[in-house]
Image (cartoon, rainbow, N blue to C red):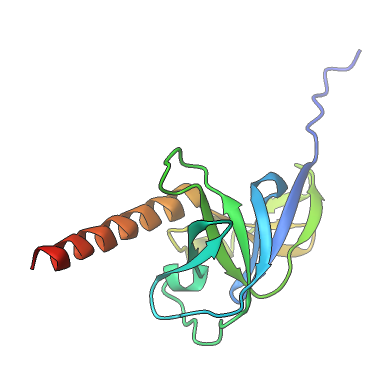
Length: 162
């Protein structure tokens, strides 16, 4: 008998963004959709999906990067990691369609050069084989979305009071 522990591959999605590639577990994706109309005026925009109002973000905006060239018409809808009824899904604008990749522990390497310039919504920069990727900090992204939703709700209440 061998004492070697076998770590299974993780079925993952490589999601292209204007600022690089995200890598996320495949089971987080709820849908990939084409956006007919977009209003790119706020940090968090909204779309209707299956009768739900879903927050739509660009990671470039959250990371305070120039996103004037981002106007893409695709997004990936992800299941939320937080246990909050107000936020069951989030949508992230993409540069194209994601592709699946089986990721083994051996294939995932830390990209030390990129980890020095950090966005608070990127947990880590990694390489999967030769593909540079970013692991998003989804709880941090979801928390900031919930905070913005609360600010929006408070502003609406203030408007009604006046």
